[in-house]
Length: 397
Image 1: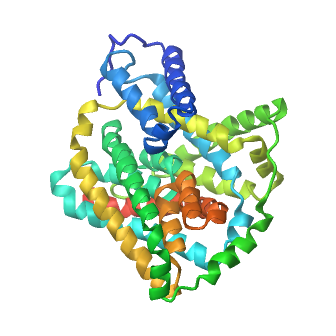
Image 2: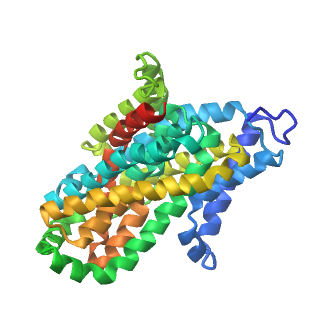
Image 3: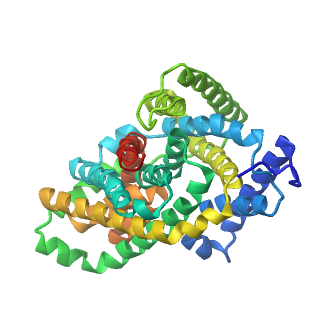
């Protein structure tokens, strides 16, 4: 979209404040008792993206602004660092082999399904559709943070992101509904496949040590998180620009290098006392930065791009079908019960918000297992999505 010199707001600080206000309003509304059910069906993320798109279309915010460039470069790295520092890798490793195998199988299904689906539909989609598929692979392996990271890495345009956000919500939550509806078949499935149902109870026993207490955010916590996060974001951004791009089309860009460095470094820090910042809400601060960034991406988008959504929805359905086929094959290999099939799928497609819900529907006490399986998928996300992006680039680039 071309810059709108006639936009009502053009000062970068005014634009940032307006977008921050939108994000705040969306999340405030999402917690109102009367609207909570609505936002469980239509998640806040879709409003965080599309409301700024509408304000730009209406001439309130500009289609281009220095604040969009600044947030893409630094807020993403700031968010990823705090999210990765918060990961409890030791607890994830206690999940057991079957749970981790099913999460990995779901990731492989996404990596395979994306290029195959693009190959089927690419003649009816824009030339840069592969970059949108790459962003979607990030979401369906590791959640919103990975979606934004991959989008920045491969240069997904704001217009290409519009249909992707719709597909992520409609297909992703539609599949979640199917998984919940399948709960009545789990005993029949497990009996027919002679599944090792004892593995569910064994996994639950291993996670009894996961109880931990949150503490109130202190001034020291806030200063450390903001100072450490922004200093690392600037340093890593500079370091990424010193490294060469790779791939044809480009998959490993300077942004990709920065993302890989901050994700890997953040995971390393999660083994140190720095991870205790999560007790004060480090991941919440990371998601705050992420949603501010997503609002800026939405403000750059062209509303007309969403008209291509039906084709993207069909492609997304085929993609999910391939993902499920891989999961079912993997389940037969290790005789995994339907619980691990459903939770392993939602750990990828839905992430940390949806996986505990699905896990709890299948086994009421197993929601923490769903959460940790989702976090395991999140760790795989950035690396797996880059592999998927490479394959997508070969098909459609």
